[in-house]
Image (cartoon, rainbow, N blue to C red; front, side):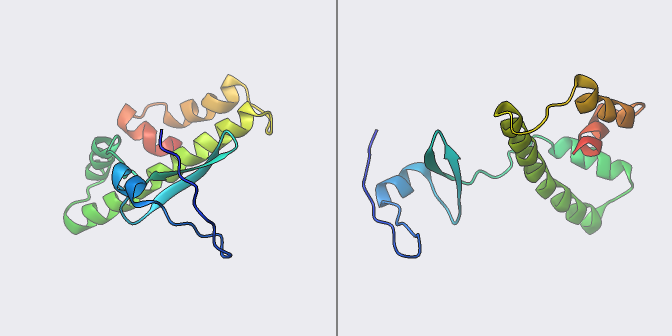
Length: 128
């Protein structure tokens, strides 16, 4: 593991060493988080498209096509990552005991009631 000491400016800015920058393939943005009492900086990974098929199938089933389909697809796809990040933050808080955890019914019952009768590809949308 390579470790470098870098300075922090008065504006709390740092310069990432070029070896680190090139090594992990940083583009225009990075993600920053606190993990085990350390600041972790990592490259931004765009959505790998886990829900693309479901999103497209749902939008097509709504009768969308052409530019309207493309626009709505992009909008819906952008909502996936923030939803997952909210879920992860809620899980982190629950694991630290900083929030009350719900029962199975509290967590999954509402989603089950909302999705009864829907195909699995529509469930992702209703539960986000």
